[in-house]
Image 1 (cartoon, helix red, strand yellow):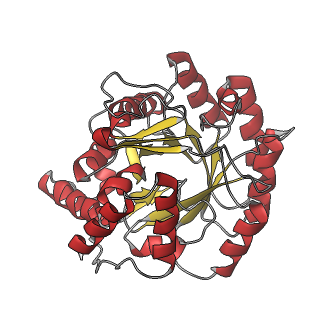
Image 2 (cartoon, rainbow, N blue to C red; image 1 turned 90 degrees about the vertical axis):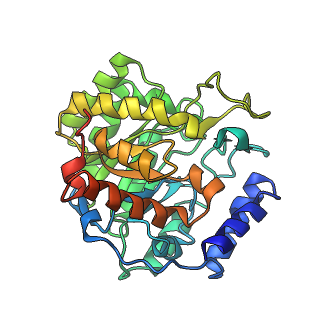
Length: 346
């Protein structure tokens, strides 16, 4: 089966990146992607903001924007899946081409711009799977031309309450002009206060950018604690371009993800772990491509991790490979659970 998945992944690279993305969604929807025979290892069971996860490996937002293939994705072995970003009104996003493979760097640059079918469409998809198992979150975004972006987050959260396991307030995408300004202390406090006032049962997470200054980090940590945010996701894509990039498209505008983001995002994760000192659980994202990088995030303070870009290069079999390798590493190091390993390197 793994050979079949590798061939399929390689075949998708014959198509432009965004077309390949669409084809992969169609393949999952049609049941053409083999489901691995997974026997979950009990050592991987863990909790995150009150949610019981079968394993700590989640799918980051951006792949299944409209909630089209949630159950097939859970079937691949993800412990949780985050769909979106969703905006209240449908949005076409930025002009194409807007996704670029940096194969030599095992990276991706995207400037999608929150393209999605809108709140009504996602609500219908989530309503249709009510009663099914699996931890499913929704990444919340704001329309590009919105007059009141805070209201966009509140509108989507209120409309989808009861249909998702958690919500993520995404203020860190570099592809919506001005969005990252919401990370400033006054703006963030106002946004989080309104969102947390509107929320009912489902936990609310905040997703931040990796391109933060030290003073930004302190302000965000303060806002997260003061507003009782349930978890912090570190981090989104970066607008920085490391000198190490080799691919022809390395200067394209947008957010860089994949292998080159690992060190930067992990250092920021560790800094937040030190600053928050266990008061808020962390989710590590950025450059995870195997069990070793996932384990490093956990040891740096992540209660759970998310990935996306590595699947572009390694295919859907990567999820079960990481879970298997994580279980082996936890046992080899004498940990009885994922939770026991969280932050041991901090």
